[in-house]
Image (tube, rainbow over all chains, first blue to last red; front, side):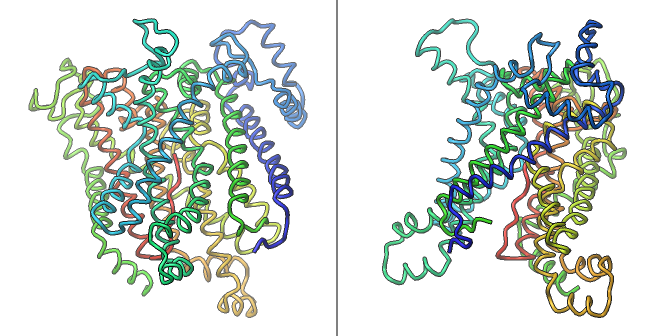
Length: 328
Length: 284
């Protein structure tokens, strides 16, 4: 059924080309924010800091602030494309360096969450679909509905209240213990202990979402004609579930990993703030307090581009594993 | 009307959906009657700081770090959350209807352009952009509503578009076109009324996400500084999490219950309107 007969490679190339206007669009939105912000655009480019006059002059020149709006936009796009995201006066480092330096910690949190939440959500969704309308199914659906309604930062606070304050089992904030200097494997263990609560907090909504989607798409697949036909041919239920059901259900799951990536970005910003996890999200929180606008704008730009890339990858993977897709 | 009657009939038979509706109605009542129900002025500071729940009968849910009544804050916070949630969802639904209907009705290049534009807005991390806009332009209630509304329309637009695509070549639209009706009349008078049920579903789920987004901004210290909001209360609770659990537990429960209420109503309406179709809510 591969409609237009386009090859996967051509499809991938097409999708990459289609992403370019999106990246341009995001740069333009950043530009508009800087120029629409109340006051002098130079404030948005430097942040509310008493910057030296020469530096202000350099920024004015670099971003062509005395030129017409159109020229200014071209200059801005040029600067961004050269990786020139400005300088953070709050941290005294270039924004690009600052964000990249913190990116690893955020990625560790996000990737662990995606892997953990997808595994748990898939498990719950499969069980719920297999034993539809059983008490187990109702429990899974109830959990998913409630889990989907709890703000991530509040689930973080609840986890702290229970596991750190009440039970004292796990640390409530930071990247590692400050009192004992662990080394080698013990250090990794210590960091893993610090990650448990943030990952749980961030996972809750994602598990809820994955459970719901796995359940509904599996139920739909199991009711479809070809599965009913397989069942009448006497193929065991478990084999049907694995052979037909899961393969068909995999595509919507991959899509939500892409589509809800923006959510997990927002979620990790909130969770990092709750748990004092020194990643990009925490940096965002600090930058708001410090009115460090170049850092905020740099994060917006980099995160947006990351989202585009993740969407691109999921689209291509989606096309790769689902031969029914029409490349158009 | 028969379509709406049918939906109401199925909706009433869903216990969870009815439970959600009761939650929502109860919250709306609390928000409207806040001055009558709240035991204290929500902003009044007192020397009675960090009272735990039940310690003083005047403050049933305790007090915060400034000696303000937690219960009164939770009650007045319902006003902020519901007002922002409903107004922002109305804004995003309005924009979504406008863009989605033009896209689906005209198709072709208009559609291609508008859908790329929609894709751009779906790509941008809403929370990050909202933070920056509020940090730049200030966080009055009106601006919060506008920001959340303007960043939340893509879901509605895509739904309206797909509905218009399936309607635009139906006989009733063709006959209207042949009889010389204008595009505007066809879009807003002829087609739009037929797609109201799914739009209401999306709008209801959008209220839930708007409330979550407002609370998240409040948690980052970017709520309306003159109002006590649930997100703002949780932000203050964060600094005292080890000593004053009640500052976190009650406002957080209020957010969760409100969002749950709207999600249950939205899910129930979705199933009642179209038993086979599932619309997934957006993300924060």
